[in-house]
Length: 571
Image: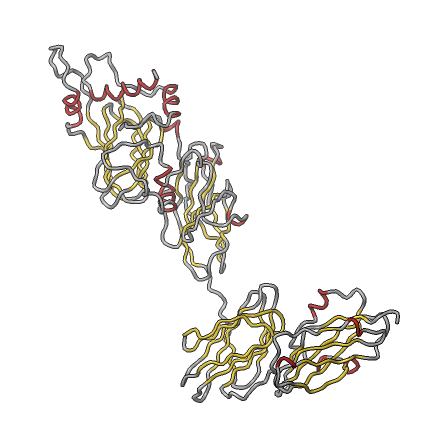
């Protein structure tokens, strides 16, 4: 406790007249100073700025705050840094002479403490420097006079927090990383979703060999002038939830609930991107999309990924001394990502089938503009492989959004002189192929109707050494069905089968020798719309791939799901 009393006595010495020249205001005792700053509550309820340590504090709007520190000897180097966090500050640094004699004029009586305080603080000091704004601003002097220094701060915009650093040994301390001679960030490469940044290393790392890491901040609004401002923005959701009440002092070292990092997480970077090697190593997740902080170690080139095309982004770079956790800002930059390659819009003709190919995760845009007035418009879609998503807009208004597998038909209400924009989005699994038909004629149907279940069922009990019996569902429409067979190896697997599942490949792609038969079939009772067929002339113990095609009135066919069957080896 003795060392704690030393600093409190120091503050009293500032406020009490000195009785003799042998009583001096404290200078920086390095051993004592190190003991003091290790105790985070040491400056609690104190207006004293410690020599060589950065403090964080809080300002209420239109409520000024004053800090003191002492320079005992003339010609002392002095550096003061004030960092606004999330609002502009007005601040002024002034100095006044220290009182040498007690005002009691030798009577031996000490004046009351409040009168002694007034004697110093009411005197008008000499203004050394003043500033108004939100930049990180410095006062630096290689030869400062002795005296009591006052730092007055005011925020007229809103409640805010800030940081202050003062030292009488600026040459040896150097807590802030030094910027290179060219502190700009260069954009070396620009893509639709990526931006590559490069910057010159801090001399603090390259020459002084101090541990420096670089933190990149990305957002869509503006550049930041300090990492403190970034932290304030990242913590804006809860930064003011537990703000101190006016008139009450609080520890400037305990700001975890004001949006400042506490010691428990000072080694962790706060970020808002999913953990990925693209974005660096130290991140945590929080649902904020517009501001991202990425710390990347000591690299001086980095590619930011997963950006949106044709979007302007602001990039800031901060060099952080990992020993002191103090940072310096490079000159920020901004860049707009490249536009997406413009999609060519395919024009659909009334009543004509159009083949569409879509890359994996890709999209295609189609346009249908009927030449005549119409009451209804019909879109028929045949997805050849995996499911695709279709969206239809009429004059900008969304009318339809659905996933399509197999054959689907959509009938929409028409409108005179309407134009339809169709967006087709492919599968995530692989490329997509489909056929689409748009028509204003309700009886124009190029694709045959299909049952909900397009599987082929094989009857194991009816299987022989030379034949198999299968069944499939039909519909109420009279359609033509053709069945084909193909002998395959015994090691034919599901992956090979999947590659042959293109439903848009019709019977015209098959060999004549593979054709079994064609027949017409339908049933008005949908429950009885089932047909069976026995395929004969097969070899014992062999595997066959069976396909059933249904052919519509317009000549377009749809293939049912392929079926792998095997004849008995011994009968």
